Image (cartoon, rainbow, N blue to C red):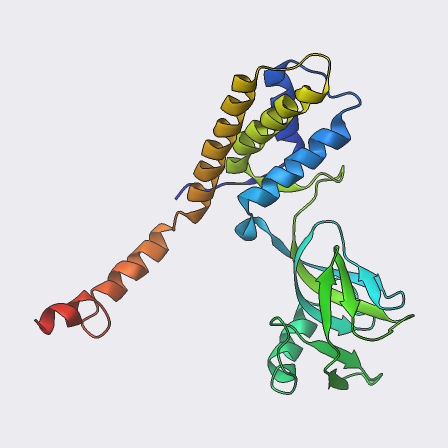
Length: 237
């Protein structure tokens, strides 16, 4: 299995501009939006990192960080942004008392140093914000989520093997947008760029799905286990 490191998505933006012979000046916001859209269409679960954030609740909503992709846990109160041990210690205990809501739960800090109380307050994610079923204005909440890493300039980081696919997506979107400009690209060229994006996206997804040598060995051992694998099936014939 190839090892893919994380690189800033701007690398893909610069590559696309270089391929098309255009200047990024004035177009960076649009090109970045296209690049992020491409990354989300490729899917990057294994590129996401566990992160934490302390958010302010205004009425029934708390805005999530832009790079958040999946919310895992919520703790009411400001527990800082390095609360891995806190969440780990509480998760097994709290889920035995609170019905799972999208595999998450809400824990309310009662003020004691080691005192916590579970609550069944329901919530959902809407428009990149946590929306609670009741008004929680003034509360602070600590959120554990999976999201993109960002470089020092605020660009999200993506798997290195996604760069070619993101470049292809930007080139397709640029060609497609030309229909609304005085200088239009030929319809055939737009279709070619779209097909290139589809092919590169499929290759990136396939590369992400490749299993490691260790996983392959474990699967092979399981399939040859006479109690659970092919050995049992053969023995029954």
